[in-house]
Image (cartoon, rainbow, N blue to C red):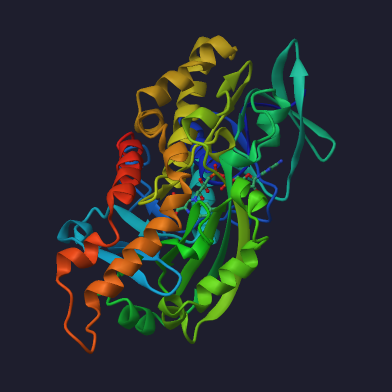
Length: 429
Ligand SMILES: Cc1cc2nc3c(=O)[nH]c(=O)nc-3n(C[C@H](O)[C@H](O)[C@H](O)COP(=O)(O)OP(=O)(O)OC[C@H]3O[C@@H](n4cnc5c(N)ncnc54)[C@H](O)[C@@H]3O)c2cc1C
């Protein structure tokens, strides 16, 4: 008799593992296929996960989760060509348990999460790439991997940003460059005591830093730095559309080297050893670029559906992956109760997402990609603020100009009018 699963999950990142863990916890027969050597082997993230939105979905997970450091200090740096301005935020609330967010290394976390899902009863097969879908009577009925047919009542596509599974099911069309960014990242090993000294961290504390402006040569994107226990995650994210259009022809590895050589960064990573280099695409098109989420016998979750969002002060995707994996599993459980895996029944997945933080966030911030792609945020304002600060702090040989005229020189009617226009757009997010 042919083996048949309740659900087959394609991809063992956070969305896939979240779905597998939830389904197996309810006693369903679930098979997860991951093309990497292990879960976490091929997964790239910047490195900070916000736990609050998904805490109750996985109540047993957090106590022993192999996170790196809890984030107790936030910084945003606006970089102009020759100067930078930093805002540092440390709040007592960030230091109280349960912590809001942690730095994370996916090779460690996903591998551990896969073990937890297996303990619940999920079957996880690594080094298995799903090549195609099986269709029966107009619905998805399983997958083909390495020439072998595997059947299930439902397939959950969790195969990441350029999901071929969702594409083959007709739920996603090949992407438009404006909806994607590319990220590069290095994990740089450093002695924990050095990390704590350099970033002024108490025991277990971590720092998160974001950078914008000259770091991406004025293109939409930014830099990030997260402190881990024994390393630093340093990276750069740039809009693919703007990279393709950039007249300077500058490439991201060059941009990344220049970022690392900035004095603000070089001092932080000095003496460190690069242990890992990775690059990955990120969905950044927001609400308008989400894929269709369900079809007959299939659901789409995580990056595969487009659930990642950059709104300047936060970069989020991991908890959307965990939450959408969870709701996909809950929808499958409901469908199994009804014995019906049609698109109509599986549409409950979208309803669940709509009443959760996931779709509410995407709707609330639906204008963010459009508002933030304004090039003035990445070149004009960093230079403007840099110049104002330079003049405010300057003490010339002769008399010093009064403060108001110093600032006013940069903010004539034309500049203020343009700023008001930008502000009106920012007020949409
Ligand atoms: C540079 C960078 C910085 C980021 N920073 C942050 C951050 O700080 N915080 C945050 O929350 N989010 C961040 N994100 C986004 C976040 O990492 C993603 O949203 C999240 O990892 C998505 O998880 P996922 O499970 O949907 O996809 P993935 O983690 O990409 O998992 C997809 C899995 O599917 C597997 N797979 C693919 N195709 C197949 C196939 N055919 N068969 C079998 N397996 C397959 C892959 O090997 C992979 O394991 C960042 C992303 C990048 C690239």
